[in-house]
Image (tube, rainbow, N blue to C red; front, side, top):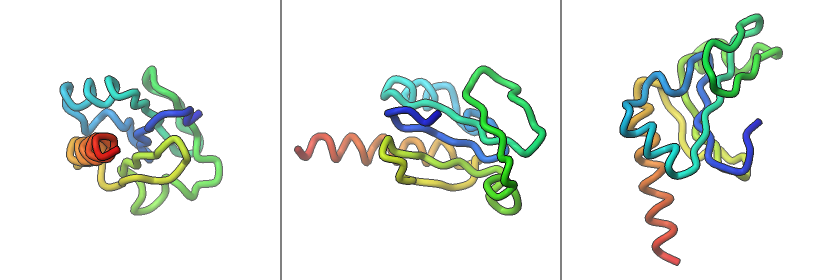
Amino acid sequence: MLGDHLTLIGLGIDPRAGLDAATQARWQAHGGAFVHVGLRGQHATSDIAFAEDLSDCLVQGSARGHVLVCRPDRVILHDGPATQANRIVEQCLQALTLTATQY
């Protein structure tokens, strides 16, 4: 489901909800994908990848409404409230761009 690219994961929320159009376009231009992890019993409500949290441990409590940036090697690069998704995505893209230009 995560593939070989950066993935913005929304916990209990569509991860695109906190992104403006320009940031979403930049994310996708860099190969970024989206995954919505929903509550048990919740169903996909959009055209992005959807996973149901059958264990009730990813989306419950304070994690709900947060986004995670997952690298292709499955390491979490950045996370925070979905209301800060623009900042989170921009910081990740900036860090990856700086890293790529150093080599």
